[in-house]
Length: 74
Length: 160
Image (cartoon, rainbow over the protein chains, first blue to last red):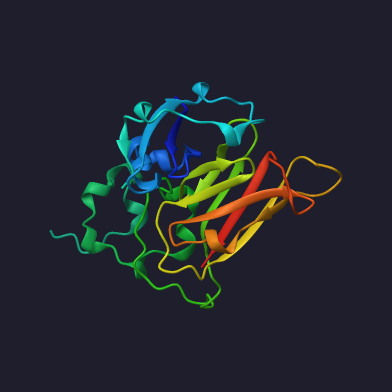
């Protein structure tokens, strides 16, 4: 169950967090999200399969704010 | 008639069990050094060490965080210690997020990258000064010192 955490920076660029397998021994994905997503930014936890592996236009990726419903960074 | 003397070779091995020997009856002085070897010790348990380690020089430093990650495709962490996650910021730009933050930013970093050659140059793993904090550090991967490159291995050690 490989997860990624998506958030949108204030400049509208997209950050994608990959949790460390080692950290997942003691923390949940949501705990890592709250800790590592910048303070006040909303995030969404998705399966890694939902993230494109083609990074040609990585810097142009975007996401609608309404999708970021799983929590807010501490 | 009271028994006044028992010699060891008069006691059958099967007549003695651990339960019949009081803990207080055994002292270190009564155990010969060559009577103990690894086969007689249970080495599978964890034991708390309460003594003091001597002979180790102070100020040597320790690895306080480390990570190896694959920056290609959908970046992922291969292995790590005291690293909770990496953040994929854009092509060739990442943050390494520490599980336990440091007290200051005076930590030493060692980087390396590779697994693939681009334009006959080695991977350069750069750490921009303005992206070093107590809780995370920015990592940029390039070749020819300026061209974005996402290699199979990006490695970082933090020593304090």
